[in-house]
Length: 438
Image (cartoon, rainbow, N blue to C red; front, side, top):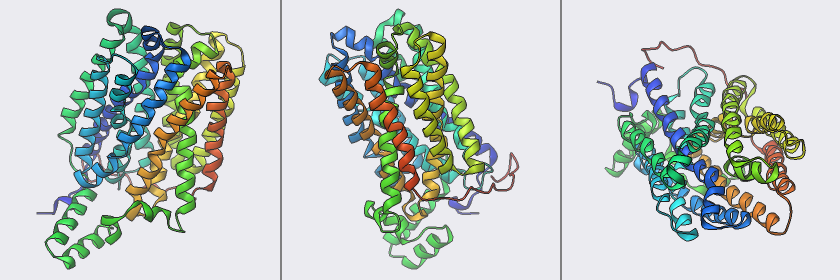
């Protein structure tokens, strides 16, 4: 009987794993973006100004950053499946407890738990990279899962439009808790990745004093001594330093744009373009539907032209389109098209980015490198919300403020990606039978 880490991953297993990871990401994003979507309503209920509400969102982003720091340890010590379950349950708690918030402080503390939901994509990136090891067109497969971001944002906007008039904002958050809990239950049936099972066995043998057996297994599975003991300093060696810094900066700058145009989308549309809140929800639904296509397109292009090139091109176009949206006409048709294209080119490249991160770091520091870059996302959220709040508080109108805090840094994220490592366009593996080894 073969060892657990040597058992083939079948096409059926890949389909099940992909479906569960997609659902987990959808409802994690649902929780994460729901707060930004409902922020104008929450602010009105508590009597906050726009500047104060965005300042609250800044402190929420600080909490998200702190919580997200623990996910890398969960992945490495508790396993990929358990980390997935914990992050989804964290998103469920942040949704359910938000309905109990009584003011700014409690809201910040509760919404910090959404850092688990935000970090679910790191779990997906590591877990699926290992489960898709021999799958054909891995990048496109991952783009299907990563497209849960626009779907989750679409669900948040769509259900808000339906539930808000009936239940109010508090119960709208409570309802968001239910599907996340169901996904966590289904995730308990997922298999652990072969790579982590091998890593766990290497650790067991080493702890038992079997250094020879541990070394043989590590070498046979593409692991080495560094794979079990790698730390943050290992991604700042001379060979990787520039790549790590540029990749982290790209996440930081790009998440400033995401905070402005995606998380605070309703605020930008209502204040910068004069769109009513109800119409802004409709625009969010339509724009995120287009954004879903952006993930598939960028994932497919990344498989053919290389993911780094795809990311840079998408973000450059996104920055330019966002400026056209902010300073162009305020007619509904124009705003819908340009805002949809902004999300298409802003979020779509993440289908290529997460897989690029895995490909661009050596195997022994892949998890550490991915997490170091990814935790800069919440920092970018803090910076984006903070810059936007400061500009609004200084008296700048919403359009120019969004251009500085969002568009300028979206363009800058593409520029700093030029300093990252070049990875040749991947060659697809042979087609695997649906019921056989993938």
